[in-house]
Length: 184
Image (tube, rainbow, N blue to C red; front, side, top):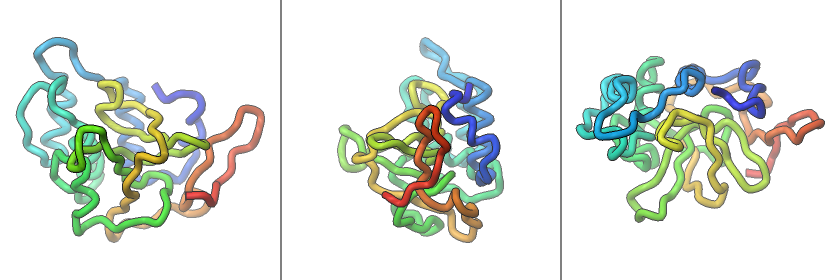
């Protein structure tokens, strides 16, 4: 389910991969408890061309999901199960600041090679919100500390969103009209 706070996404000029990711969030895809895997999450591995074995409860699948959403919409992914693979992949360009649907890569407390990845959908003062997989063991929109992000990436050759979605998006404060923000 898409939280009400993110209702603006229905009218936003979202890239096709973000639209696909939001459909998975809306469908409520989540891990299956116990030592087995959700068939849809296993399908992400095929869709994203990220062959990787193991139970979805034990295998981090955020990059697998990101690849699946890109590849299923005709956009080349990193084809790696590593979140930070987007930081060095030649088919993605670096952005100075986030924009709707960009690939957001964050650090992790598990070491320099690990991290998390998802699609940027907005921010508030402290948090960046991502639509992604393996967020609370599900496809969801989740909050992450803004200070943990190491990069914003965009697929080469793909059109960027039109204004105001081409810059950081400040989430609405209840009772106020939402607006883009220039602080990155």
